[in-house]
Length: 468
Image (cartoon, rainbow, N blue to C red; front, top):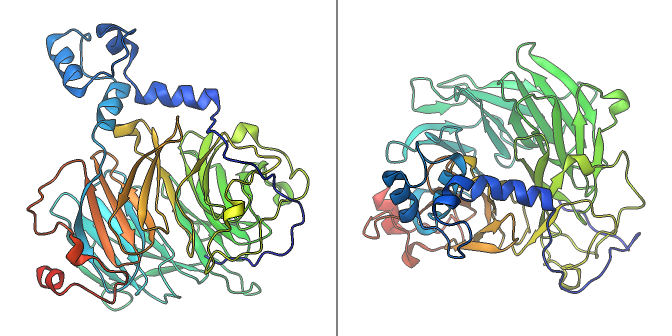
């Protein structure tokens, strides 16, 4: 959220010309296995042929029995899903009078949650025409809704802002309107001690069992709240600067990943937190980390960064401590300056990442990135918002930008891909929640056109307002 004014270089990054994309062989192989036709299917269509297998051929082979008994394998399904990326549209989900900051599908895809700067969170019924399921007026909000998290059972929503309190609201209660402590109670989880300086929370996540909430904050710390005991159970002074991102590594809840404005990704094993020492440190970024997404296997994760890159990591390559001095980029502030062109292809001298993805832009705000869904793509892609008003979709294996979704008139801070359907939602500072599909009706009145285009949510389209 906050930038840092750079001083003179302390340890120079390595300048270089354009570097070809490279990726670790193991993660490339694992990704291909999960997202390309299975050996059984390849055998049915002559494994040596160069032409890609079409979806029609796969369906025909399944129906005729040529590709073996039973239905598609998970890899076949993901391969077929990759042929239908959500690139058409966009159509309007909502048109608000304040900037859209965060958005998230529920784990089953039935609900979409979006948070806006103007103290508002809306939950939409994705299975019922995107109707508003819950309209939440937030409590004690500082500046904006900084993050949102649905509990695994989709019963509760946690929301944070630039304060040390996370609020919890029941999203399955009967009322559609949820005004904090007026129509419904929004319980507050207090993360600070009386002797602590008040801090703001940038990142909030539920554990997979729904019994804990973890946050990262601008007090350089990670806190874990035990909902059963109703208290903070873990406090870690984790980094030397703001902790912009924190997440659970897998379903066990034992391991955490964090990213900070100190340029570092750290891995924390809660079973051995002696003297607040991380299980390991991963170096490679040259500026503050804005977001982290785990692949869910306890091994791989990605990070977005103000150095204008996404990096892919393997925790088995982490170091016990930081090697050497951290390189410093040029004197700039991401909140209001352009990224220095001479720094675009600089490289960390001790880069431990498996791959680096370039093309999108990270300016002015903590822009987020994710792995694409396992069910429909085999996590073959990485997708991210961008300050150049687009959503970028990268191929994990090749590093190519396979799609760039452009329509919005302002920064896309967040985006979310439906876990099963070819639907992607972009949330922008122009006030729109926009829906991208693999196919759709161009005559649908909710299709966004150039007449709806704007750079600010305070310049709403009169026609669109009548539709809403």
